[in-house]
Length: 233
Ligand SMILES: C[S@@+](CC[C@H](N)C(=O)[O-])C[C@H]1O[C@@H](n2cnc3c(N)ncnc32)[C@H](O)[C@@H]1O
Image (cartoon, rainbow, N blue to C red; front, side, top):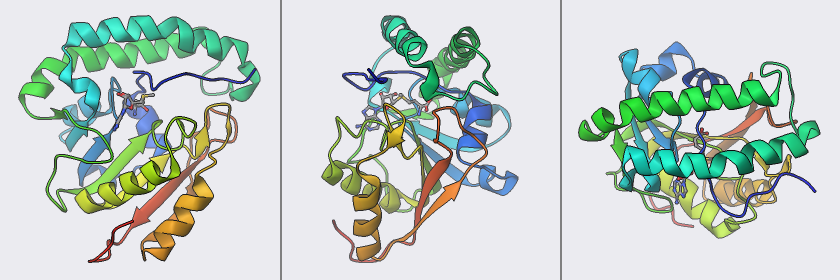
């Protein structure tokens, strides 16, 4: 049986993984960035330490650090166990083993947890969730969404994807989504429908290769920009 999860889990990647997943240049890092569904990733912490401007939004931020730590602990065995049972769905190159994967992910999530109380007080971690975000139009230059849209295509409908991406385009000039695979390392059932529908709404849509591949075949991001004045899905 391929990698599967019943619901969306809190599981966080590192600052360096975000750089590669979204092919972020120095210029990109100087823009106002929204991390949508960042959960316990350490991107916000890492970019803030380097002087960047970043806000993360996720429903999980209604919880305290200790509650999020407990959710990560509950999730840990399922994610690591599923990975161990489906080794051939992943590329064991940059990350050589399940043990190293667990170590890297836990280190990133510890970094997030250490930063979270201060970041929440500073407004860098905001409670909210797709398909409606608590931000004014054009609040950000770039919105990033990693391992939520497309990955959970079995749980989230095509209509939800479309409304969510249009919403991300409302609050940011450019939107990048990674990966285009769903759980089980197969191309998301929604990619084709989403691209076609966004093009019909006059958004500029491209699929770009990135220098990151952990789920086998997962080395592409969707880039969406140019908001038409009267768009609605
Ligand atoms: C697998 S984690 C990915 C975390 C991070 N982006 C990364 O790649 O390391 C999925 C995240 O999506 C968040 N999420 C769940 N529902 C959401 C929604 N409606 N809008 C935005 N994020 C949501 C979860 O709370 C969780 O933190």
